[in-house]
Length: 494
Image (cartoon, rainbow, N blue to C red; front, side, top):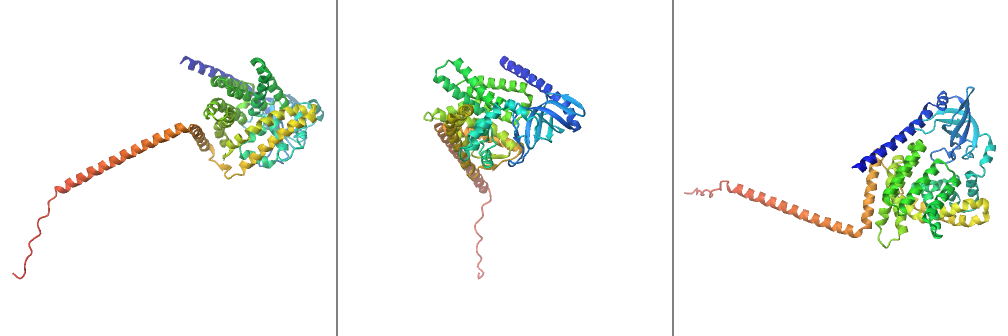
């Protein structure tokens, strides 16, 4: 009881800390000078720092020509006043805005508008001009953005889907991804492969740990080396909020799978979520953050038990390859159908089928990124192997997307979410029964015997009831007056 009370007290304390941090963050966003300038909807000249990659606007397909870029305000010139702030805004623009990179300082002009309710940014700027000060780009030309562009250029010689998919799976650059393949990956639930996610970070950490164990390094040295390698990977692909979140979740997921106690991994996950929310309260409104936390929670809670259900003849790597996506999907599916009311029928089997090819794409592709500017001739080898694996991933996704019923409609709203939760629970039970055929067979036979006994008891009860009714009817008829002998026949002739 004392442990429960202490746990609740600590939870309330951390919850209050997150709420206080969110309140401090929301005050300037709602009532600060940037919000006041946005309320007037005047044209402004703004100086900003780019803090994220451009994202193309559009719903059905690419080619809209408009881009959304997350930025942080440095100063705003409006109505003869110079406003200095560090508020976050969202820039939307056309030509040139797809070329800006994280860490670049640009200046532009446009109309500042108020952000929508629930939006993390303080305002939205519709840029009327391309980004100015292009010389600022030179200061970051050797940073993550330049590495991404060089790696993308180095993969252009690959054939088919591999040229567009490989940069997406390694660095998150999906600008060259074919629209048809993108739609196929949405249908099969594999779009997470084209983003820097916790799975990428787990593979990087796992590869580094295996490499360190090959050289028989001490456990402490192995941990330090793995964390330093992960930090280098984060810096290479760009240390924005989504990548940092993926790195934290990937490290926790790997710790849960590598033999650590489930309670300890769950505690690390709770602390990580609290720490990330304190650092950036806007993550609480991010669907990506929610899905990342749920996927990691599923891996921490369910992955090892599901993998342990496998028979002894099943290799441990195969059991983990099935358990990890299943555990993540069990908790993420209700949220996904709430956002998009459709069910990807082959999502689990597709993720299991491509799992053996994701590791070489991530590890070898990551090795090739720094080799491209240093030893371009040597980078061809890992790019070729990673490209072949990426081609298999694309072919597998296209195969399952072409099967009948690959995408099924699903109820919308709370009904769809509740239905998916029930389906997830039923899936977990079904998997347990399939992996325990002896127990399942015994349970089915026991249930069959009980049903037979129940039916026999019911039949006996019906017969006894019928017999009682028959005897009761006979007794009732015996009390009725019996008919007498027929009357004597009269002879008319007498």
